[in-house]
Image (cartoon, rainbow, N blue to C red; front, side, top):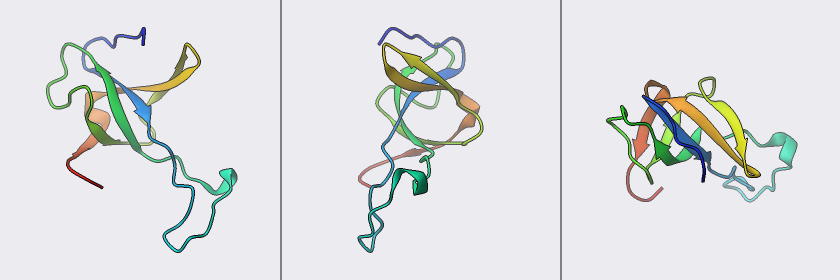
Length: 89
């Protein structure tokens, strides 16, 4: 990846939306919500609370979506990250 965030910014890769419900119903693309969950792929030098490889929850209205080399990423301020997910989901 050729993107390095500055200051307190974090680059996230959005995790895939669920394909089926818990009861087994398959969801079409139009019915899927974008998850507010992503994997940290790069951090700026002023980021203190998260690190590369963390899975995080973020506010849906905070990220800036960018496309680099055909891959989609989101750039968010560290303050827009709501929580770090620890352990198995």
